[in-house]
Amino acid sequence: MTDNKITRALISVSDKSGLVEFARFLSESNVAILSTGGSAKMLREANIPVTEVSDHTGFPEIMDGRVKTLHPVIHGGLLARRDDEKHQQAMSAHDIAPIDLLVVNLYPFEETVARGADFETCIENIDIGGPALIRGAAKNHAFVTVVTGPGDYEAVRREMAANDGGTTADLRRRLAAKAYARTGSYDAAIAGWFGRELGEDLPEWMAAGGQMKQILRYGENPHQKAAFYVGGAARPGLASAAQVQGKELSFNNLNDTDAAFELVAEFDHPAIAIIKHANPAGVAEADGLAAAYRQALACDPVSAFGGIIAANRVLDGETATQIAELFAEVVIAPGATNEAKEILAARKALRVLLTEGTPDPLESGLTLRSLAGGYLVQTRDTGRVSERDLKTVTKHRPTPDEVRDMLFGMKVCKHVKSNAIVFARDSATVGVGAGQMSRVDSVRIAAHKAGEHAGTKGSVVASDAFFPFPDGLLAAIEAGATAAIQPGGSVRDEEIVAVADKAGIAMVFTGMRHFRH
Image (cartoon, rainbow, N blue to C red):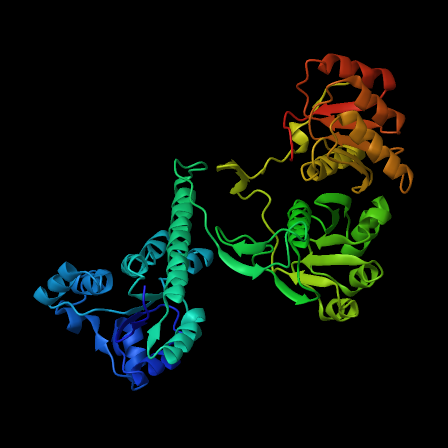
């Protein structure tokens, strides 16, 4: 593929940033410009010579602009091979002029959906001509340069200036690959939106796409490459967060921060979650954020060092003052007062993210995990247990305080790696056991860590799945638990209940498991 001089360009863009400057460069480089609608109007107002596509094709825009570039003169100009004699003969016979540069970005479908537009408005923002043009130009990148965003204007300018008005094969190939990725992501957004509108949780064909938000220094480990992409349905969190201070976010920072924010969003009252390696080191709910922070930190202050702190309310000065005393990697919250920002600014390395909202824990959606040659896709765990769902299976019934703590503990359990065990007291975690191969080991670890700090005496114990053997429950009772909450469903349920009755503790079944792997 040789360098191709650009003599004619077609410009039709939704995002008009930088357009006038780029088009003026093209015009000054003796490039004839074809354009449509608002793009043509902007260029004419800037005194840049432009020919309307309808004048070029001899066919008017029809159907409210739905049909304007879908014409053989346009697509023939993009798709014709310059080194194929039959293609050249067809162009001559049908009066088709070559188009060497396509500058197109698509109708803002993703933004339209994100702002909550109605169904018909979203439909009207599905671009048809744009993707067809982009795909055609990208296919013929041996001869055509395709630009799908203002960020590539400068690269084209540099190459044209260095190559007598042409672009190199390397640039055209890279822009073509980017073009197909853009149309693929665009179609994935449309497919995902349609699926949500139709209530299809698991469609026959799975489409996923996104735009790179940032390249990360590395992945989980320094020898791995990584980047952060955003896409899909709008959900308050990392994709929408503004980083107001601190060092660059790492792969592990992002993963842990997402886990923290999703957890803290579970609570209706002011709450704090402190996360380390995607597991809670401490969680608490209180009348105010400052009190919640103190209780969350008390659960495991050693593990909290270097952790992620998430709040479900606007950070205030008192809470920020306490946070500033701890070495933390990231703080994420829906917002922060000016006083809180000033206090946290003293910790210059601390990353502070503000999101202007919290994710809805009951909002449906899909999670995706890659496997060799495919993906595992499931609906988000929106399951939530209420007091009316609890089935007391022991002779001793739980007290109102125990019920409160059991429901709190199960909300936390849902966000702990399995096998998950949470000891809770006074709407705060006092011990967390995560990711063990046996449930009894999770209980012992949670009790041991709690013994170093707040202790488990008088707490309740929550389990993400049933106790398969009495040993786990016995270990929790030995640690001082006075009540237990678990899904139930084991073949040994009667044996487990008998153990609870013998110890005089209350136990409830929820009927809902919360594995998290």
